[in-house]
Length: 238
View 1 (tube, rainbow, N blue to C red):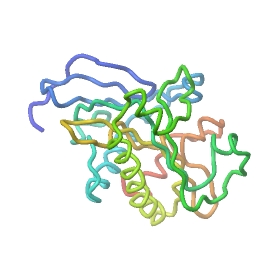
View 2 (cartoon, helix red, strand yellow):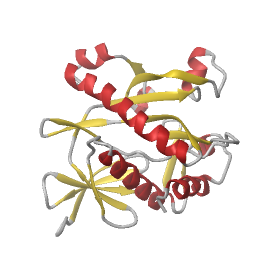
View 3 (cartoon, one colour):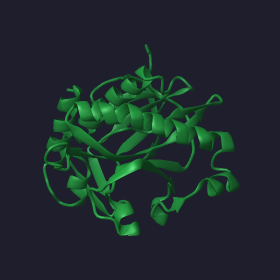
View 4 (cartoon, rainbow, N blue to C red):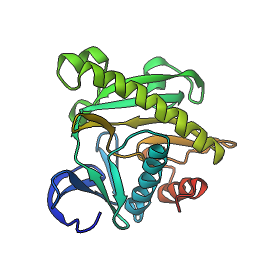
């Protein structure tokens, strides 16, 4: 869009900041180099991470739009900024798991790497102070975080994303292990919001099962940005 100007800072998250614009319906999402894990207990700045995540998210969002999945993404503005629609976000994270990894292994005593067929779906309440506790659709409806219809649409759209992205990553020699999505209302329509980057998903090399995502930071494996770049190059992002 032409003549978009960055305004006042609205909010700063763990790795992104949102800014007002001169258009009420749009915001600027700024990707920083900050990296955090364990609900903000481990924090570090990794040079180049903001740029790669901004471009990665733009690629994924545009791909999902081509698959008839509506998102808040509008366009890339520069290396670290994207223009997005202003959403009324539900404080809910939607998680799909195709392979056992992370918290589900701890909760259920599963061995990491077990294929999950059919994939599982989980809701979490977005609150770092509480550790993003797991919730269900009854919590969401009872506390007014989303309507019954929005809950259904979040589930449907999250699985539509899974169908689209599993193949995209597989064709690039990678396994989409799991990921989280967030949704919000835009003028009465539920849209995919926030981001889809290596910060919010787990992706392994298909042959070696080497971890290419944020687990490299969580587990101290190193080469975090370099692994993000590997993912981006395989997908054709960069």
